[in-house]
Length: 428
Image 1: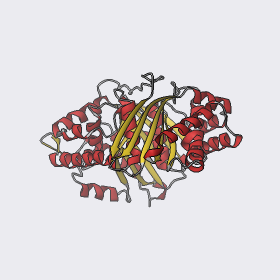
Image 2: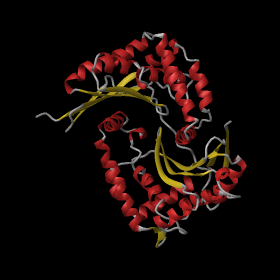
Image 3: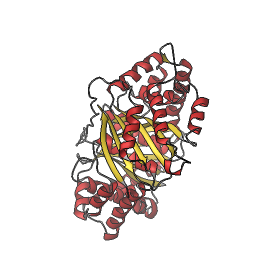
Image 4: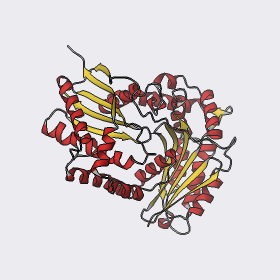
């Protein structure tokens, strides 16, 4: 039995507590929510990595490891995520549930205290962050940003996002950009840290067997020194319903690759996680390209062999759907035409009974599996929190089960092709 409660612990600090005894470990996370912006994304992404290097009581990685060992081998890792046009940065902790610890051990309070220390009492020098910690983690961040080009499938979607949503917060990568990352200083990062502590909404999450009241008390105590100026406002999200140009834009890039990457970005006509037709949009995505039984997989890849892979993903908080495919460079026009032809089939309601049944069941099974995986469950609730929603996976699954063929076709009709990105090999 899973029981979920939501409560505000202090201004702008909200707790989602999932009470369950099905796991031997607990998950505890803390996320500061900030609007995605090119000017601050790199600093925000760097911050949890620097904070994770040490606290006032445990000033280096060795001392922190010893403190985690005292929590029966617990872990606390920095986290940087993008939820719509919100950047969520902080920590995700995992530790043994008290029910499986010897004696009257209270691991939860110690874990919450360590999390509070990481956020509020970092290792410092001269009233700011340690320079060596900032410089080391800054180099790691730049490496992560620059390494994104090495995974060409993910890189093509990143570039599609940047081109399609240029000028919109959604076009900013969760890690920011290398140039701004390289310009970060200990003094500038400290200033950004103070701004987030005083202004950013904080989402707390707990999953384990402890009662919600005990969790709230432990976290309220751990964050007692949090400086606040007023009640923080949650970041908004701009869903652009229509394309911003008459014809789809084509962006072509050449790199040293043997397999081309074709990515198509669609606006969903305003349909998103906040609209009534969201379940239909989810089923359409699953039916179109989101599952191994989708039209893109079975037709474009398997039947016609036009792609090495072909799939679609839905950005629920932005109203954007993206198709990703790997093709021979000479197959660009044929592959693009067939990807769009399968969309037209959906619009016309050319959907077999087994297709819509499989699509609905795939989503329902995924939501059910979320309840059995602590990491996925934490990420689901963070996404809900960023969107300002409290709908549980089970409730969403019930709505998915009621979606009809006509509703799927209506969702497909609202899609409009905005941008095409093609990554091809260098000629010669």
